Amino acid sequence: MSLFGLEGKTALVIGGGRGMGEATALHLAQVGCDVAIVDNAQERAEYVSDQVIKLGRRSLPVVADILDENSVDAAIARVEA
Image (cartoon, rainbow, N blue to C red; front, side):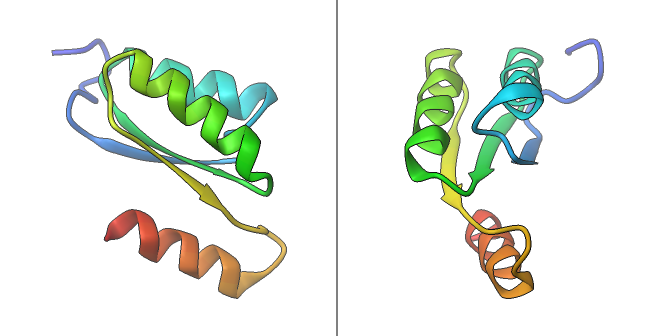
């Protein structure tokens, strides 16, 4: 069991393609989470997603504009699926 009891959980990190979001996503993967990386740039989301996979966790890169409610709803639906 991980320190935070997150082993086997799935996290969705908005803004996960860079900066604090990237660091958060990678830390969550290190403590046992699968991580969906949501960012407005496909390339950044894919890069961080690849890093999560290298840590042995599942990951899904998702492109969304957090200023667009429909885009966010679609991103959440994709992760849930």
